[in-house]
Amino acid sequence: MKSQVEEKVLAALDAFQIEMPSWAFSDTGTRFGKFIQPFAARSVEEKFADAGQVHAVTGCCPTLALHVLWDCPPGSPTSNIKALEKKYGIRAGAINPTLFQDQIYKHGSLSNEQPAARKAALDHILDSIKIAKELGSRDISLWFADGSCYPGTTNIRHRKAWMAEGLKKSHDALAPNQRLLVEYKPFEPAFYHTDIADWGMSYIYSKAAGPQARVLVDTGHHYLAENIEQIVAWLLSEDMLGGFHFNDRRYADDDLTLGSIDPYQVFRIFAEIRLFEWETGKKADIAYMIDQSHNLKNKIEEMIQTAAIAQEINGKASLLRFEELAKAQQEQRLVDAESIFRDAFDTDVRPAIREWRRAHKLHEDPLSAFRASGYMERIGRERAGRAVAGGTYA
Ligand SMILES: [Mn+2]
Image (cartoon, rainbow, N blue to C red; front, side):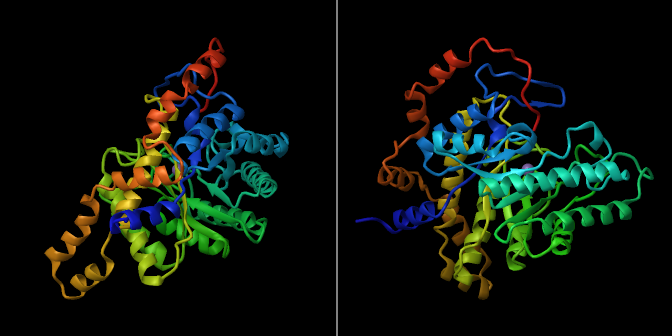
């Protein structure tokens, strides 16, 4: 006989998948340098191989987000990616155009003053949409480094118009089932203004681009005191929440492991989603994605850890006693409402998650299963002795 907790958590986990970023498996760094892990993935095949290991032990990460220039540059046939999908049991997920590393983007991409840069950016997005169509990927995820570093050096309204124009043209190229996800970030690498600084700007651009554009919330892309779950609630109520890039942070866009600093923050986000679903009776159409940079931890292990944390916090949110909560809110019993909210967060769902894993023929402890698989030893042999140059910053 399953307990109510088990039933709810099992159902929540059955309905939950989270996407890995290909760039989390390759060497990444900080502004000050890159720390090389000798066995980090150096090719798109190695990224698929490592991602396949994560999905094999977690059972909840069947897709891999790709960054176009790093993983499937225009000109390289998408049949390569399709072969890797088949070989490693991982599907290509969101397609991320790479709009920030080429020299032409020094002063921005779609918002650049120079028409040649804007054209290069748009052409790259259109190529990326074509790649996504060939791979059957639904989402094109757009993050722009566009902005400026000094007051008075650019015309903010002109840049807004150029960005809107580029996004509209991008949207026009989508297939009917595709979506344009527009990410925002208040600073970095631009430190005076960014052209999509917050969710409101992303919302306005998305609305102007067309009906298939949605806002992408990267949890690290906010000022410290910002109420992210309120943004989530607003976007849900406007049917404008396209997806998440999950990570945690203490100071800025630190790209730390989800929930490592503030798991209650992650819970509050999931709680808003589950509350919305309970009230409306429909599943929120959200792409759950991870966007982290693992330059100190073992990359594959950290991805396994992240997937487990995401399952755990989503499982906790599924335990909210919605009727009781709504009643307490209506009757303005603040302490009761908050206690009901906290009860879900405070419940240990790990036994239920182990039960879910057993039911799906997975090892109860994915990290132990990975460590026992011998995979690290195998890639240690296979990938040893390669040149250490290369890798990507993300
Ligand atoms: Mn992101």
